[in-house]
Image (cartoon, rainbow, N blue to C red):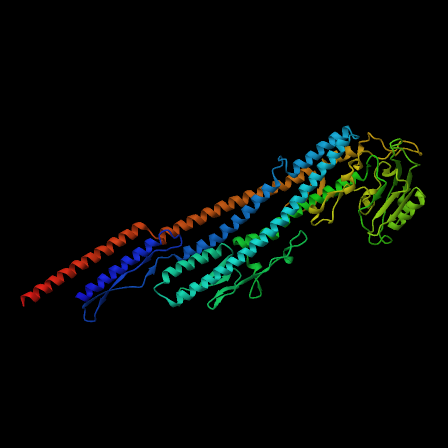
Length: 587
């Protein structure tokens, strides 16, 4: 009887110890309630031998824990994407903001209006060139922003991989503990759940529970082993040395496990989101901005090549490079006038000699054009192909400048490209870029000589009237080219399908605002998804805590129950001792 009572006291003490341990873990969000249950020990002949304590049992809901992991993947994906879209909106600025691209284009158009009224005003010339430079700088900044965000995403992937490998190592240690200890099992399983949830914040996983013990194996969504019984299969990732608009996903860092491609398995978690940011969101935005940059450059250059600065430059050097001048076809229709304009103050704007009117319909190659030009120029000017492969025309006399215009009702254009003579060769381009299309946004600048000398900005056009040397060729008050450019900003252009935007016909300013409008829709959707997913995760975590978490009320009640049991057994033990004492004294 005494041994039975002592066993009860021992069990009651163990129960009290468990209550204390639970209360000590009360503020641990990963802690699950652990309970201990006393068991009666009865002999084969029916005698009560006392009580013993079953091993601690963890209150758990495996299915709910799995749901929480799945929701963690989704919540971290949407949160990471939402933050990226927020940064995009902040960088783009609303169309009315002074820093936005649409605003800067409108600002450029407005100062063109001032120059149209007073084309000879040098301050307006300088302002126009400065405003266009500001537009191009904004375009470049956005292109740079796209690539810097891709670099951040690449770094986010690398950081995520490091964390994944750390978590896998900790899970392996937990597995070892679970296979070797029963008494610590409930608490190690709390650690296990914590690590599994943490792992799910980075990537989508599959968890396989072993039937012999509480240890787990972990696989990627595509079934690639991340954690085996023998230990983790660490994720490998090497960051790209550099990221640019010309590099796509195939050129950048890839994830692998055991030499197997893991990237294709990742569609969730912060790593999956960073992959989407790096390989989808910002490349698409770059394509939108490159399409804008391409149309801006081609449209403004086409107009600028129709006009001339005042006074014009002595040298016009093309930006179009021809690798084979003999084999490159040119099919130019109509007549083109090239005039040598006096740049001296005394005779500024007059023809230095009779203008040269060229009919290029018989020219079939670039070399043919050069020969025809030199034949007509004589000693007054020289046409040549530079070492780089561009056409260059130089007036022999330093006080003469070169101006070009098409003759006839419509501009003379190359049948293949649709570009006018000067535009075809890029002789009087306003905007230069290093790239043809991909990554063009980052490399566009105002042509250096125009930026340095704003008077070279095209304002008027060369006279198309019959003329001889000494006649007026360019007017200081000429503004036809400025008017065309100002109106050209309102023209609806054919934009090709790009990253986020479908093919469309609209003005440059409208297209700049369309980039913002498309992004604000994406940002709103991402923000809404993030809020929904975060709330869903919170509700599941609250449900899990209510079902399996430690409740102070329950622990107090359990403590009271164990205390009552201990007190009762103590009283029985004392009564038994008194009975034995009385029995001994009576003998």
